[in-house]
Image 1 (cartoon, one colour):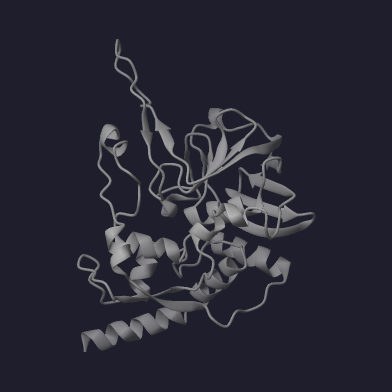
Image 2 (spheres, one colour):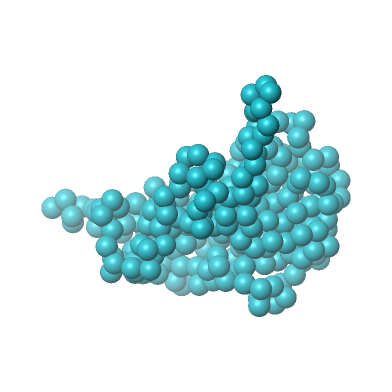
Length: 287
């Protein structure tokens, strides 16, 4: 009886108009950030931009994926201490839930609701999961051999007041991504025009503590690449030293003023923006 109820809940969730709208908008490049079936302003913005672009309905919002032994073998445990993080070969996913939520552009809670009854603490190879259908993987957007293919954005607009990044080809908006901006307003970059000067897939990250005890020298550590790297899976540096657009290991946090100054995107959106831009792409920062 409990299992039948869980299946009923999953079917109801899959048929949620909000969930389907979030998936369809995201499949066309207009992201609400994390797909979760919950209405809100980011979903409304995605719908608005998708409607302006005239996108149509898609017939296949979901796909079934199978957890493999390779998926389980790729999991890592991220230690707390910076020195220990720097020793890792890669800052990969820590759990299967995190891995497949990211593959489906979902919140982990949304993935749970779509797959009720899964024992996430005891996942075995062969487990089948339902996730939103995104045929192009995060990794594929970052491949060097596709860097010069497809659409090329002529302009990127970053709105500080709306917490969003929009990519344009001439006058047409082709992608919308919620972002996070600096918590400290004094660290916000000035409004005006900049440009992208570097595009780095799978970057590492040099860590130095914000506060160092008096009389002690700050230790710096280089964290390896991976989805749990502090700058996520892609770095797009701006011609303003220290500033860039990048991914994050915490996609649910996007849409707030909480970064140190850069513009954070969910990893899947950072990868998609990376695919659209090139060194030299114009960036306009505005309210």
